[in-house]
Length: 380
Image (cartoon, rainbow, N blue to C red):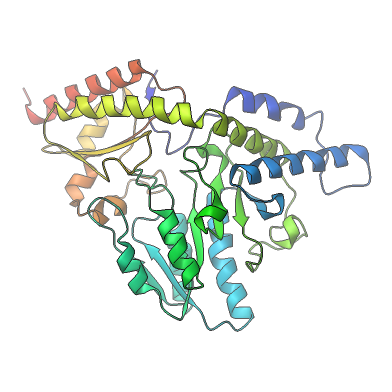
C-alpha cells in the first residue's frame, strides 16, 4: 500500500465522522425542508446542530453559515454574490483584488467577473510566497469592492498575514474574502478578530466527507444568490440539503478542533524530519516561507532531474503530487509566481502530512525520493 502524503488534495473521512453520518443515510432520511412531521423536524435539527458546530469553530453566530457543496461553490457564491449585489444596488465600488497564488476556485470566478466588466488586480507574491502588504495597500483605491486572499496556500502551505490584511481592508471599507479550505481545522481562525467578512471551507480537507462545505458571512454583507430554485439557506443556496454530509461536516470540524494543537505539533516534527533528510540529498530547494507555513506541509523542487520521470518513479511507493489536484497536470502557477522555472515546477514534490502519518511514512518517503534522485542524477 502507498504511503499517503497528499492530504492537501483530500483527507480520509474519519471513522468517527462516518459513525455520526451513518443513521442519516437510511433510518433518518427525511427532507429537512418538510417540516410538517417529526422525522423532517429531526433532520432539520441535525442540520442546525451542524451549523452551530461550524460557526463555533470560527467564532461566528450560527446564522453566518451558508451550507453548500464545498469551497469551490462557496468561493463562487462569495465573489460573484458580492459583485452582483453591488451592481444591483448601484454601488460605485467595483474593483476586485487578489493574489497570483490563489486557487483556481478564486482566480477563475474573478476572471469571469473581469470579463464582464469589473476591474481586477492580481498581485504578485514575494519569493517566499508571502504577499507584500505595501503592494496591497497601494492597490486599494476608492473603487475597490473586495480583496480575496487565501489563509493557507494549497501547494506551498504559506500562511498569509490575515490580521494585517483584515485591518487594511476594514480601514478602507473594503470587504475581505478568505479561502480557508486548507486552514480550517488546521490552524486557529477567528473571523471577527481577523476582520474577515467572508470565509470558505470544505469538509474533505479536514477529515470530513466530500461534497459539503460552507461559506461564512459577516452580518450585513449583501450577497446575490448563484443557485436558484428554492428558499433553502436563507434564499442564498437553493436545493435539498444533504443531511448526512452536513452532520459529517459538523462532526469533522469538532474533531479537528479537539486535536488541532497536538496534531499540528506532531506533524510539524515529522515534516521537519522529512526536510532534514531531503536536504542531505543536495540540490533540494524549499518552496515557500520556511516557518510561516502549515505544520503539515512541505513543498520542494529537486534540481537536476526530469519531473515527469521523478513522479513516475515515486508513484509505486508514495501518494504525493507536484501541485494542486485541480491543475490536471499543468505546471503550477503558484511555483511560477515564486520565480520557479517550468522545469523546476515540474520537478517539485508537495508532501501533505495527515492525522495518520507516521515516522514510518517519513522513512519510506526519504528512501523513495533518495532512490529516485540517485537513479535520475546518476543513471547506470
